[in-house]
Amino acid sequence: MEFDAIVVGAGFSGLYMLHKLRDGVGLSVRVLEAGDGVGGTWYWNRYPGARCDSESHYYSYSFSKELEQEWEWSERYPEQPEIMRYLNHVADRFDLRRDIQFKSRVTEASYDEAANRWNIRTDSGERLTAKFFIPAVGCLSAANIPRIAGLGSFQGTWYHTGEWPHEGVDFTGKRVGLIGTGSTGIQATPVIAALAAHLTVFQRTPNYSIPARNAPLSPEFQKYVKENYAEIRRKTRESTNGHPFEIADRSALAIAPEERQALYEDAWQHGGLRFRATFKDIMVNKEANDTAADFIRSKICQIVKDPAVAAKLMPLDHPFATKRPPIDSDYFETFNRENVLLVDLRESPIEAITPAGVRTGNAEYPLDIIVFATGFDAMTGPMLRMDIRGKNGLLLKNAWAAGPRTYLGLQVAGFPNMFTVTGPGSPSVLCNMPVAIEQHVDWIADCIGYIRERGLHSIETTPEAAERWVSHVNDAANATLLPMAGSSWYLGANVPGKPRVFMPYAGGMATYRNICEAVAAKGYEGFVLR
Ligand code: NA7
Image 1 (cartoon, rainbow, N blue to C red):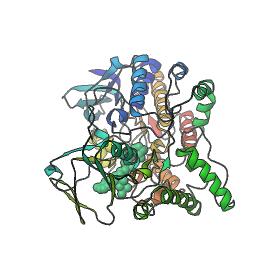
Image 2 (image 1 turned 180 degrees about the vertical axis):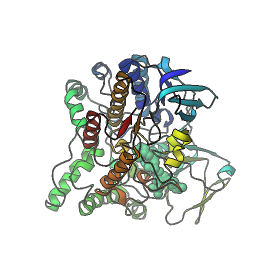
Image 3 (image 1 turned 30 degrees about the horizontal axis):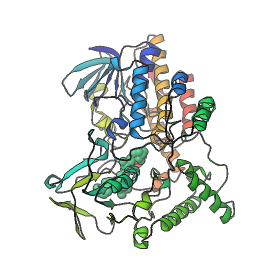
Image 4 (image 1 turned 30 degrees about the vertical axis):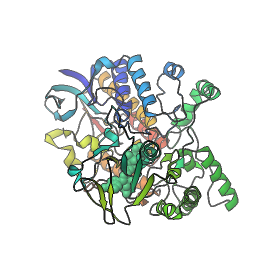
């Protein structure tokens, strides 16, 4: 089957890419999606407590004013089922399903230079070809299941949060072990604790977390949002992280401690990712960051009643927000429950999974269910699990052997007419995702429109432009405290053997948008158009 473009994935990015290319540029498009429904990351992440950390009114598409006005969000942060309802509504409203092929996982994609076509193969052996190949596979969609000895011998059941069974899991009366205390583990812990007979949380790295303060949205707020969407979107687009609020223009170090404390207290009470925006230097000055970290640690001490447990929950090894900052609903409070036990894996790591449960150097913990909230092979994982070959059979895996190398996070040298939506080297996970996605999709669609109008054959980044961009991505990260979290998935450090390269672009969404616009305005500088 032949198409103008093949898009991989029917999440936020694949759906919008299809709409833009089909209904905007006028291409024949086929979306290939592994799941049997739309939703992407949200299709797979159905674990208890799964909720977005961006607020609903801006964790949404901005491309359709009608969609904005007709859709009603119910809570401050959308829960997974509500996001799924939204994306299904989008798929129906824009008549997208007819061009999406479900239960079709792409296994291979190779570029045929003579024909200037991408040849795609799916897990059912089907073959398709297209001029443009657009993996819109998400940044967090390849589950990281740690290789722990003995997992196969476990007599109970185990799950990874990112591959959660659609029928759900019944925790009633069960002894549950949860491994991992990133955003996911922090969301799931209170919910599982309330459902299970007993919950053991296995923590390797303590984490900073800010209360989400989730609540139903009032009719007044809903009305305010609808009336002010244009302004909300403008702020969002012009911001560093794709949120419609500004980072305060004041230093944490330039004010009296009492005043600083009051501002942190305010931000803590307000809740959410905005806490990080309390001062302009939290992400760039270690001393300023320490004031935020100290504040959060003092809160953990106040909330958690047992001082020994509170001590184990103290994040000490990385500055605040240098790993993705989680937000929570009663996470630290959950450790005051009688049926919850915290196991510090730094004291004694997991040695094995046994038929009965988890064994550390100190003890064996009998369990009926193990939940792996152990994250993802982020950003490059979803790309590399497809066998992608560019010119002369160049394997993407080899091109990225020392870490991902892209130009603008949009293209890889040697892979003409392939565009990555929110690829490594773009703001992606450092930004509210729909904002990053819309910017990329719009740019890609404009670029393909440009190629079509001029009857061009192909577009490919030059290796020099990619090298310069990789170096700029490094400089941007090094201008912040982000690289100080040695074990963060931003660096690929959570996956054994993965090269350590800071993957997302830390220069800010607004700056990045300007760079991309300038590149296009200069006739796609850094790309060769044939
Ligand atoms: P994360 O943020 O990667 O967190 C994974 C957690 O699992 C983290 O606490 C890890 O500890 C822990 N982990 C990973 N492997 C192991 C092993 N082998 N043993 C014990 N503990 C382990 O993934 P999430 O799913 O929470 O969040 C991903 C993103 O989704 C999030 O950032 C948001 O953008 C949404 P570590 O810190 O590596 O010591």
